[in-house]
Structures are given as structure tokens and as C-alpha cells.
Image 1 (tube, helix red, strand yellow):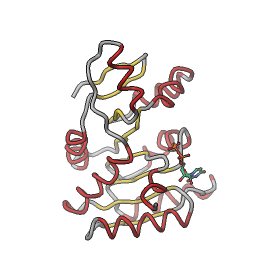
Image 2: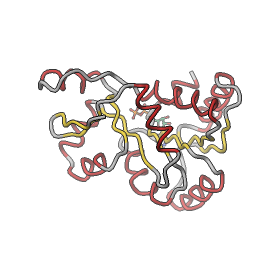
Image 3: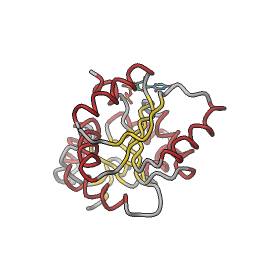
Length: 195
Ligand code: UDP
């Protein structure tokens, strides 16, 4: 698939099916890759902050998450993008993970939300392997221990739900230390799943 630029910000021309295929391929790779959700909020942030823009450029998959970027791409004559909402991609990855045996780790949200999201995912996707989980209120000094926990869990897919831009900055800092293959930042999706 093609990586285009909308108002100077990179975004991938992918649909849901191609995103799942990308995850399948990336799981077999040898270095961790991240999925970022591109929406108006992120585009504005990247336009005002070159470091944030650079961080996005390092993303392995930049999904058209918000309708704003799709409208902007169309106005700019870049053609039609299909919307891939991050909050739909996460359950789709979980469905695929349950079927193919990838294990997942859930990092983020309030403690009760995190626990509830695990329960809902186990119910919705029987057989899913949740290798570990941790709420999103971890102190900086506890981070090395969390990194160890994620690595020793053997999880292949990590979901990070710390809100924007905290989650993107966390990934930029810690992904190089992780053994996971795919990481998706998911904003408030654990709250959505927990209901
Ligand atoms: N959150 C967290 N740790 C923090 C701050 C926020 O885990 O230090 C969680 C919060 O509990 C919520 C999510 O991050 O589950 C933020 O969701 P929000 O809808 O604000 O994020 P957005 O989708 O706007 O990026």
C-alpha cells in the first residue's frame, strides 16, 4: 500500500483487510512495529510539532482513523481513503489473534476498565491468549519493571491505551526495548470495549 501525505502528515492508504494482513506479516518479522491512528487531532499536533511528526514517520502502519483526514485527502485531490477506525481495528486484531494464536498484552486505562476489557475480550473471542495486562497509571520509575513484564509475558501484540499524545510518546521511548512484534496505540478503546 501507498503512504501519502495529507497537509504534510503521512498516512497509509489501507483498508481493514490490508491492516490485518500487515499485522500477520509483521508478526513474523524481527523488530517491533507500531500502528498509529491518524485523525484531525494528530494532524494538527504533527503540524505544530516537528518531533511529533518525526515520530509518526517512524510508524509502521498509519491508519486513516478519523473522517477528517479522509475528507482532507479528498479535497486535496489525493483520492479516496477507506476509514480504518482504531477502535475497530483493535477487536479485529483480537479476533485474528484468537484464531491464529498470537498472544496479546493490554497496557493502559484505569485499573477497573483494564480488567473489564480483558473479560469482555475473553468472552467475545474465546481462546484468546491474554499474556498480561497493566493499567495505565504506572510511575516512571516503575517503567523498567513493566517493560520486563511485557517482555517475559511473550506477548506478540501490545495495545497501549494512554490517550494522545502520551501513548505515542511512550511508544517512541519504549518500543525499542520491547520484544513484541506489533504495538497498536488505541486511545480510549479499552473504555469502549469495557462498555
Ligand atoms: N490514561 C491512562 N494513563 C494516563 C492517562 C490516561 O491509562 O496517565 C487512559 C485513560 O484512563 C483512558 C485513555 O487513557 O482510558 C484516554 O482515553 P481518551 O479517550 O482521553 O484518549 P483519546 O482517544 O482521546 O486519545
